[in-house]
Image 1 (cartoon, helix red, strand yellow):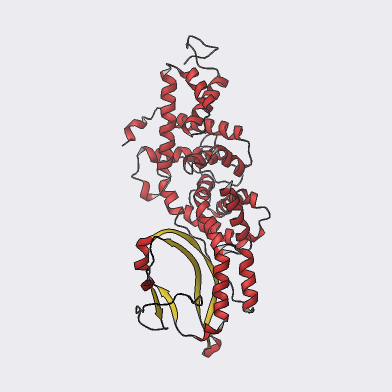
Image 2 (image 1 turned 180 degrees about the horizontal axis):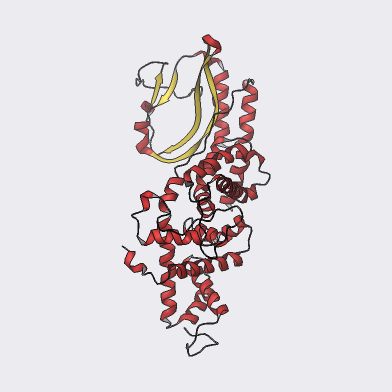
Length: 210
Length: 194
């Protein structure tokens, strides 16, 4: 290995030069090298088989490290957050609207306002909801935006014996899809407890409920 | 810049209790958190156990984060503290090799090709030897090496998390790689390939 201090390559490269070369090699195999780095590396290593071997070793070691720890990383990537639902607080629907809208923006805020207003409007007495046939929609999905959790809705609370309470909630999550097609028959009207039944939707102007 | 802005928004939302933002942040960052744990954990503790602990601390303490820009160093500290806590609880079954030292907050493990556990007793492949050799490196070299090789973090990202300049990161990586190769000695890595 030749350097400016050892033009005939008869001795070991001085420590500083060797470290500079190793840093250069590191930049190259890590994809951090600039064009100047590459030019300097070529200049220092031209025709030097030891340097070529060193580059190959470093690149190989990098791949081996990745392989060696892959099982541990795979285990770690299965670990999810212990997410809990927020406590259901007694707030008015209007307060709920402004609290939610204050933390998010754009399409999500508009959607939430429509939903919440729909829930507190005259249709809240309706016992039908609009659902969607995901299986029919799925092949047409081009883009999705990740859902945002809304505070859940309490559907019933019953007091049981022995000081216990039975609480049922509906979890709500906003999820937006961009599709390349839309068929109104994907939208189904459904009563609670009813077996899923496709009902043609003639008018899609209603913005209430889910 | 858009990505950075988006992440700042996510962090701010997470600090306010947005669970979806918390989840997004966790999924985006848990791989490099795992590299921190791998660099610092006592060998008797499983990495996923420590990840669970970090996840719990993350969700319960995210509201204490003051500056979105310090999110990653904050998360790293949680991971290291989890490892140190586990080390304090771990039963000391140590035999120090000649010249080996215990670093503060760490438990030094004896050098053994079977130290990883019963399931790896039969693993004599090169990757297994590399695994053992990496874990014998000093933590200040081990940590950036794992962050680079496993998570493919840039030098700047590693520097921001560790609070070190890029030049220091480069030097530590170069030394770590050299030390690893020296530890591997004359072992022929070509035999283990394929």
